[in-house]
Image 1 (cartoon, helix red, strand yellow):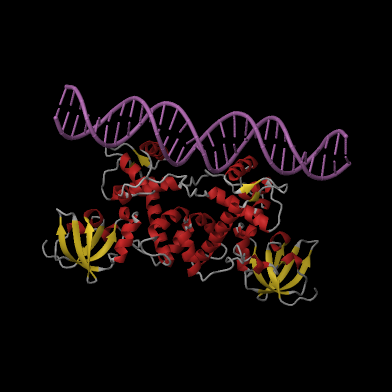
Image 2 (cartoon, rainbow over the protein chains, first blue to last red):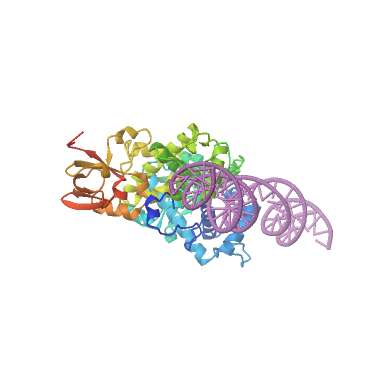
Length: 243
Length: 243
DNA sequence: CATATAAATTAGTGTATACTAATTGTGAAA
DNA sequence: TTTCACAATTAGTATACACTAATTTATATG
């Protein structure tokens, strides 16, 4: 309880940290989000990967995952590595949703390429009540500003294909920049500048696997992306030329 | 560094927690805010008081203050108890400002009586950049939604007097509900419902020191406040009847 | 001044979160 | 199969932040 001038004179017991609600810490919320994303995308969930993505050492991951298992958020019974339990999944979806809602909130005053990092700090502090107010205020969004679907709206993204899977001549609309690419603010800034943002129509100019590049034309301007980046950008095909 | 898919391939060293910036923790920020408020109001700054306001035990305060002294935020050299050093004061002003800006941000979607508590969670996550964007977006506010002046605008509040210092017949405009009262959401809710909010004109009906109450008429409705609450509400006198 | 009360500090713990160094798996290639 | 490379864990350490119990230091007041 911060401050509490009046609180005190109401003689009610001071709340202690680990109360019944068992508030999930920001650290654990970060683990939940990454586990959620990897699981959702069907990627291998291995400790090293988490360590890389979280920027911590492997032993730290081992330790933290143990606490998460103890707390019923993660299970280790599968051979495919750690995975979210039902309560863990529910908690992860909540954090993801709050992250995305926060991004929309911030997008009113920060540029598209900057909202992710700032939202990542704030998301841990969103209450149930604020979340509800945000959802209403934002008119029930189904994606984040970068086009990633809110938990429960994954179907939206089902038909969107990665740029690396397009062929020259394809007419598309940019729909989504994957969460794992959002971390790189330089890349996001670059994409924003080149109008490679959700909603932009684009035409594929060339795809050079040997060169690991994809070149688009967006708003009459040519943009060349490396495969690593292009892989994280998804588009909706407008004029399918072959099945 | 959270996530960092691309970060990694840029082969730059991973940031560790206690870097040069020496990010101030939420806990320390809370201490800074309370120290700031007490110092600003000229109140005695003693450990027990901090413990009460922070909802922690006195030994915890002793410990934490030691760390703050070590980190140059607080000094113990005065006989009047711990006080903020220049760097501590600067940090405290920043946190206060961010808290208040966050309150305005949230006031767009949460009721007046609820923004404080929620803002208290979020304030710790506001970056320099977001702060600047907020200030611009909010059109350079000089008070928080409850009328407390932003650091640097204390003069604004110089002429506002506590309701307990008014006399029957005084015509006033409600201007401010003190920070230390904001913690009590029940009180705030009550005040909001009775229109005892910044900007409301009011007339003092009676002041009963023996009964510890002040009765106002706001928007034609009578409201009786206990002294403890009235002490934290400040108003601007419109028709001074005596000096 | 002596003592009752209140404030502050020590001492000793506990948890979450990090690290490094060293060890143990494990799977794939020689 | 043996070995190399990578993954995972153990062991040991450190810091921030919290607590209770006990002690010390004020402060105040008869």
